[in-house]
Image (tube, rainbow, N blue to C red; front, side):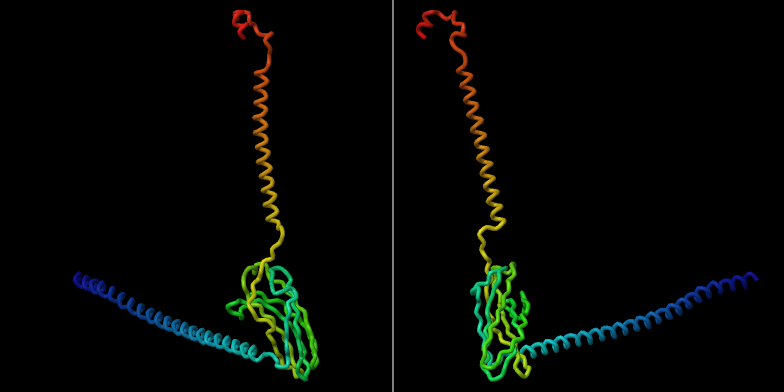
Amino acid sequence: MFNLGSRIILLFLLAFPCGLISIGQVSAESESAEDIGHDATVDEEDEEEEDEVLVEEDQIPNQEMDSDVDEESESADVTSHPDADTTIVFVTGEEFPSNEIVKFLVGFTNKGSQEFTVQSLEASFRYPQDFQFYIQNFTALPLNTVVQAQKQASFEYSFIPAQPMAGRPFGLVILLNYMDSEGKAFQTAIYNQTVTITELEEGLDGETMFMYIFLTGLVALMLFGMYQVLDSRTKRRITMKMEKGTGSMNDVDISWIPQETLNAM
């Protein structure tokens, strides 16, 4: 009886761990399968998202390239008309001082048989190495002036270069926009050259005046100090002389000096 009970207990002890191991393996395999399936699903979703992003990125450059091509084609289409002649005269001279008004006159001559409508006049400073890059863009002047055939017209425009641009070269571009009687737009570059913005030299500015006032006060302080030193020394010398020169022989007892010595003195 004891042997039978011990055998049963021994079999139970052997079977119980084996059952636990097998159950753990089955659960682990099921969990790993679920993880693998979940990871595969996540990887597929990530790949789909990456593909969508790549497709969108491919579409964006294509759209940008298309827009650039359209802008270039539009700018290339806008040219000057052979029957339109333009001239420019700078009223304030060929110098361009910063923070000062620069004024010029534009002459438009219609040499053809149809009328032109001058729409606007604009000016801008560009980067000298790349005239497509704007540094300072001025407001366009609306004109809306009709110039009949074989007639002329003149227009005035002014702008002010910015103060920080002083001492550096920039590309000055002046454009005149007009259209013919059929409504076709044209554009003429009246001025397209590199100019140097100069700095206007003024007589006295606030900083220079403050420096002069400071130097004047410093010199006055030094002179006052020297006067005080010399005055104190002069007073000391006068006081010493007065101390040495006080008193007379009548106030001194000289009875103890021999008469022969006094006669010799």
